[in-house]
Image (tube, rainbow, N blue to C red; front, side):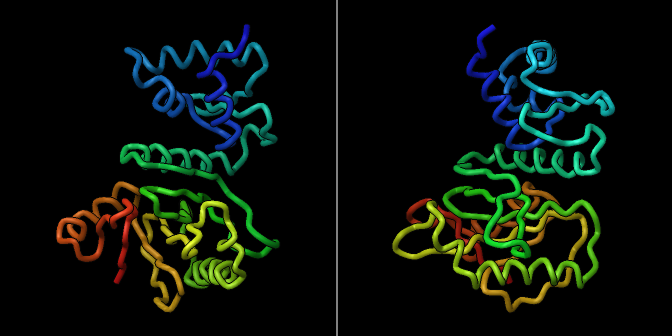
Length: 225
């Protein structure tokens, strides 16, 4: 059976995120239907039978992998990638999401390896989805790698950069744990428990037009104390 446009979109997302649970696939690709989960089950079963995706029944709901993904069906990283999908769903609620990359690579090994790069409301972000608690040293080491990436100039050559004035993405750490972070970094570091919490945190500042407001071109301006 030829793949539909939605089939191709599901497979593309599975390759992008590595792994997705059934409910997230239903939410993203079937939310306009009366029974998204039922419709998703039928389509995913057909795609599985035709060899277009992989599945693990070790999770409830089941999780699915893209055809190009080489990951053990009980990998410890599955939970991490599912958390990235949750962030993606969270951002979608606010619209204006231009780009969303999972674990992009920049420069040589040892450089920062963001969980997510996205452009939201014309503003670039590197997002760290922190499910485990880091020590102060581990978090400082992570942010120092971002400083190395900043100093390398690699990001200034990205295609999405505005030609008149290259910018470095804001670093958004999504974690239940609050970290003591040095404020001397040459980029903004923001902490929130979720993307929704980040947006809530910005609301009063947006309303007062002081620390968080839309600029003339629609981009987010963020000033973090």
